[in-house]
Length: 211
Ligand SMILES: C[S@@+](CC[C@H](N)C(=O)[O-])C[C@H]1O[C@@H](n2cnc3c(N)ncnc32)[C@H](O)[C@@H]1O
Image (cartoon, rainbow, N blue to C red):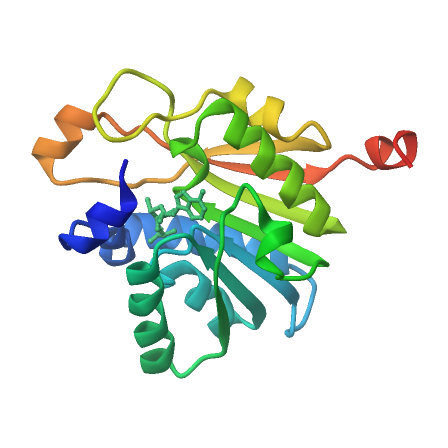
């Protein structure tokens, strides 16, 4: 998908997820699990392909110190407005998720969230993203990826579980759960989303072997 064009013409249906109670409830459940037994502030969180910042803001409200990264200037402008209206702190950075080192965001992120960037990338970009995520993550980090399954459809490429595994060899997929995302009926029929939340944790053995 050409996101620059999409934002330029005001086409951003993914933002509707914020008004979809089953999706919101499931996202909250995913976040709850990462906060279990801890008190805010929870640490650094990275919202990759943050768009207009919806889910990064949600994390900031919950007590994460959030940085959002996106390539598209217009999306970031929308995010700045949203952050201001929400009266939260969230850092917004223009950058490429496949080259996070160049974005100058630092490291030590305990939670890495992606609601929609990874599954649109080409395999080599997915692998670059995985490497960059690993480089900026804390040893006890979690990655939450919202992924549409790979199939022939317009607009969104999608990804197989094997694509996630190939991009994140230093990580173990601990859970794959339905996101309960729904679309208007016509888009539902055309795009057949059936998307999932992937939860990944860093493999300790990988760290030790590759030290
Ligand atoms: C489907 S939208 C989701 C936006 C937001 N996460 C949400 O759920 O509302 C995907 C976002 O990823 C961004 N994106 C795609 N590829 C990117 C890349 N290589 N680097 C940074 N951002 C990217 C797009 O600009 C877009 O804002």
